Image (cartoon, rainbow, N blue to C red; front, side, top):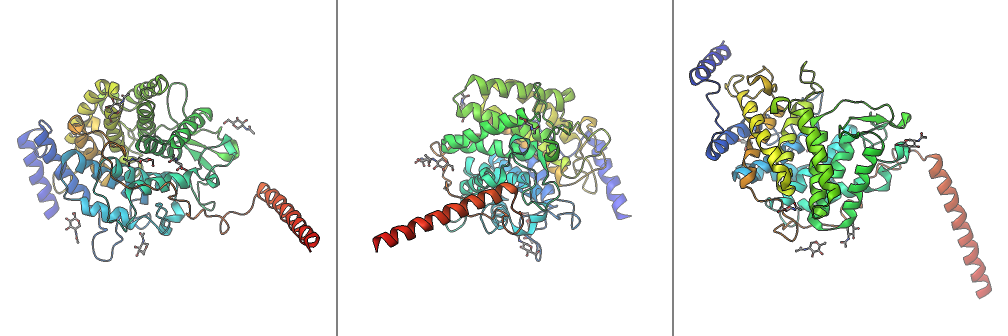
Length: 456
Ligand SMILES: *[C@@H]1O[C@H](CO)[C@@H](O)[C@H](O)[C@H]1NC(C)=O
Ligand SMILES: *[C@@H]1O[C@H](CO)[C@@H](O)[C@H](O)[C@H]1NC(C)=O
Ligand SMILES: *[C@@H]1O[C@H](CO)[C@@H](O)[C@H](O)[C@H]1NC(C)=O
Ligand SMILES: *[C@@H]1O[C@H](CO)[C@@H](O)[C@H](O)[C@H]1NC(C)=O
Ligand SMILES: *[C@@H]1O[C@H](CO)[C@@H](O)[C@H](O)[C@H]1NC(C)=O
Ligand SMILES: *[C@@H]1O[C@H](CO)[C@@H](O)[C@H](O)[C@H]1NC(C)=O
C-alpha cells in the first residue's frame, strides 16, 4: 500500500515537471549533481560494508544473489571514473577497501571463494579497474598493501603465463581458468579482449614493449580465429573441440568497447601509427553502426526482447566510459564519439523515473522512459554515461613519466596459483616432456658419477 502511494506521488512529481523531474544534464554542475544521485542509488545495491557481509562484492554469486564477482570489479572502476570526472571523493575509501579485500592470496585477483566461476574475463575486469586507478592517480594504498599498478601487472602476467595458452584454436586464452569449470572448453572475445586492453595500457603506462607485443599477438589471434571479421564485427567465441570454428555470432557492446579502447591505446603507444589508427577508426565505425541506432546505446543481442542477463544489463556503461577515454588518447575520434555519447546519455537519463524513489534507472534507453527493470547494471550504465559527459575537461590517463605514482612490479603474479597439479591432469605432451626430462636427469647423473669416479 505504502509502496503504491509513494509510486503515485513520484509519478505525479515527474508528470508535473515534464520528462524527468529529478535529472538534468544541461550544465557541468547539473551533470555532477545527477551523477552524485545516480552513484548513491547504485551503492544501495552494495551491502559489503555492512556487518557480516563480504567487502568488495555485490550480492552473489548466483544463486546467493544476482551478481557474479566480476561485476563489482567493474563497479569500482565505474566509481573511480566517477571520482576522476566529478571530483567527488566520497566513495574513495569504500572503493579502496573493496578492491584490496578481493586481491586474493597471490595478490592477483583470483580469490579462492570465486574459483568455481573464475574466468580470465572476471579477473580481467578487476585488473582493468586497478589499471584505471594507476592511470588516474587514484590515491595509492598504504605502502604495506598491494599497489594498483602491480595488481594490474599481476593479472596480466598470470594471463600471459604459458599455462593459459595452449595450441587449440591456434592459441588465445580460454574463457575459464580452472580446468574443472564449465566453459573451460570455450575461447572467447571478452577474455582475450580484457587481456589485449590491459596489455595495451600497460605498454603505454610503463613504456615496455613486451606488453605491446602481447597485445599485438592477441589482436592477430582474434582476427585469425574469426572472432573479429573484416568488417570489425566482434563475435562472442567458439569451442576448442571444434577448433573454435563453431562461432557464436552474438555481438555484445562490451567486446567492441574493450577492443576499441585497447586499439586506441596501441595507437597512442605507437605514436600515432597508421596501422593502429586504421584499426581504431574502423572499429569505431562498426561500434557506432552496430550499437548506436539513432545515436542511442542499444544492446543488440538481447535488448529487443529483454532477454539480457544481469551481466549484459551493465554493458552500456563500459561502452560509454571506454569510448570517452578513447577520445583522449586517440583525439581524432572525438568528433565522431562525443555527439553520440551526448545523445545517448540524455536518453539514458530519461529512463531514470522508476521504482519507489521515482528515479531508478531503466534499461531500454531508446524508449526514453522507465521500463520496469532496475538493478546495479542499470545504475552503472547511466552513471558511466553521465560522468563521461565531463571527459573534455578531464586530464588524460597518466603514464609513469607524466604523473602516475603507482608502484609496479614486473614480477607480480609470478607466484600465483596456476591450478596445476591439483586440477590439471598431465596431457600426452606433458608426459612426453616428463619422459625427456627423466632421460636428461639420468644422463646427467651418469655423467656426474662418471666424473666422480674418474676424479677419485
Ligand atoms: C556503506 O557505504 C555507503 C556508501 O558510502 C554508506 O552510505 C553506508 O552508510 C555504509 N554503511 C556502513 C554500515 O558503513
Ligand atoms: C570468502 O568468503 C568468506 C565467507 O563468506 C568471507 O568471510 C571472506 O571475506 C571471503 N573472502 C573474500 C576475499 O571475499
Ligand atoms: C584450427 O584453426 C586455425 C585457425 O584459427 C588453423 O590455423 C588451424 O590449422 C586449425 N587446425 C585444425 C586442426 O584444423
Ligand atoms: C596520446 O595521448 C595524449 C594524451 O595523453 C594526447 O595528448 C596525444 O595527442 C596522443 N597521441 C596521439 C598520437 O594522438
Ligand atoms: C617508469 O618505468 C620504467 C620501467 O620500469 C622505469 O625505468 C622508469 O624509471 C619509470 N619512470 C618513473 C618516472 O618512475
Ligand atoms: C618489461 O615487462 C616484462 C614483463 O613484465 C618484464 O619481464 C621485463 O623485465 C620488462 N622490461 C623492462 C626493460 O623493464
